[in-house]
Image 1 (cartoon, rainbow, N blue to C red):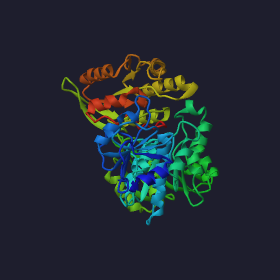
Image 2: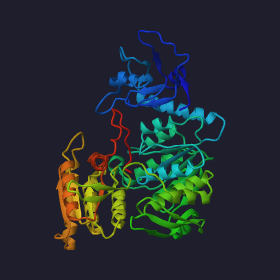
Image 3: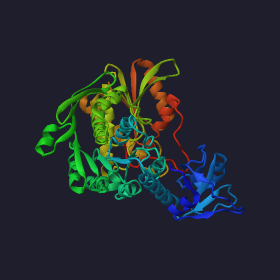
Image 4: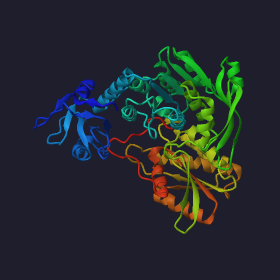
Length: 516
């Protein structure tokens, strides 16, 4: 963040400085780092105490002080805490105010600064990762790690913007109307991109029309000098052109449909193919004309659309097409648990190939992951470890059944459904897991494949791991897909297998609010 004095921070968040028993000289105290995780080791840091579902950040001020934090943002004075405190009514709301103040300060400085907002029911995080790779090749760029896209994760990322930042790529998720509007109030975009209006969080929104309205908030936030970049292939996204004052640019794969609708695609793709690891290649089209051959390092043909979205952003902001092609062909790093490939050893000395797409899930992304997975090593033995999807509303059971059937129809040989016990408000998990299982079994029966497709439900991750190891030991060329909502815990299974460090899990864990 841009260095701020304690007085400046207190004014920005409408807070009161609490010095405690001993007077503190704040005249030379400048804050350069903000975090809600007391375990972070920082210099000149502000610790934001958030009340989480499992813990209260106010209980960790001493830990924060020992790790280099100098000031804490609190909603009540914590007696005897070894930190200067700024007291506010609501620390989460104050964090948003501070983030907006940091963005406003960056805009007031010399040098160009552009804020990009990305939303959509599926593909946001991957598109954000590709966009960051492209823009950071020409100038300092800030973007979140993972899917920190809600009213906690977005402001914390916005507070990483400093004097040198040229681009800020903000991922914006939502599971209620008005949430994206609130996020754009913290980080007002100059460029907004919308990928898809799907069924993620259908239960929370109530209808696809409400999802359309919610996603539209990101283009409604643009001024007439802004740019809206829209997916022409999605009819609901295309409708958003009527809801913005900004200039509109289009991308998509259906050039014929765009032409019939009177839309001109800035970028499209043709000659799409995938290799034996499901990595797509395509000819990039600019205005319908060939503009380069691109070979993505990302698994999944659906990433062609995400790449077109990121290319549309980057070229809008000045990146030349030859440089776009060069960066994409050199490879793009994704956030954790996004179709990540690795080799996992099993206790008996065997191994299997893991396709880890366990961060989150909705019906669209489940099917896309299964499609990509089946293209990976096509001659291998395919096993899918699936978890429930949350917040899908009254159609949730039916949608789970459809995904189970889709997995069988796609050709998966072994399906292991992790049906955790009901806990912590997720009392629907066992029911949804059963719907996945039932859908798969019904499709296997319909196909006459009950003897060739194995479908099992397990109650915990350890049992799932044991089942995978046993099957992989008898099928040397096994490929395993992990896919389910965050609550299914499949990400923990991936970490166990790959020995990755665990994700942040403080009282204020920064989770996504919008499926993928």
